[in-house]
Length: 263
Image 1 (cartoon, rainbow, N blue to C red):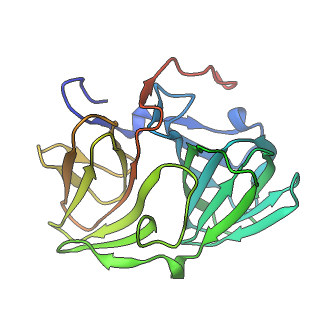
Image 2 (cartoon, rainbow, N blue to C red):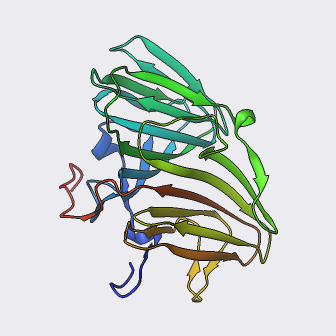
């Protein structure tokens, strides 16, 4: 965890809370929470939950309700099937797709199930919507439709949300990318006035410009603040980093973690 003197926080794997069967009420789903009700950081801008999740083959999570917010499921490996029993909406997400769950005013009663033979890995964002959309919906940005471009020397970026992406979201998520870095390449994490950012190291190792090394499973949080800020992440070998840039939203909220059913 970062000290108060730095403009960012580093959450090591041990700083995340791993939720499992006792929390979800069924086997097959594990989620490492970086932001959310079960950890000290309970919001950064509009983000109210950030999960690094694994859904085991032939398992999933049964129908449960949500209202008012929106969710993005980035499927890094495997597949998921969406079933919203309240609204009669179904959908499918394959490797590389982004599933968009717009809860709307009516809300949804949804299940996400892995009918495949391999575990599904999904990076999940939950954020507030303002105004709240009237309609509940499911949409998907397919892997082949996500723009890809070179972002500096040795950085190849896939844009999931942003000015080049066709995916339009209902919350203040301004950029959501998946970048592959060659050894020695640098990825810039930039936040303008009142913006914040989150970065997750997925593969390899990167080093912050001040020398701190980030390994897979580490989350970097740049809270919303006055004035623009930039951090450069330098790859020590081949690496992959997910990045999210967001608006001011709820600000930066710390709180007492919610008690877990699993203790």
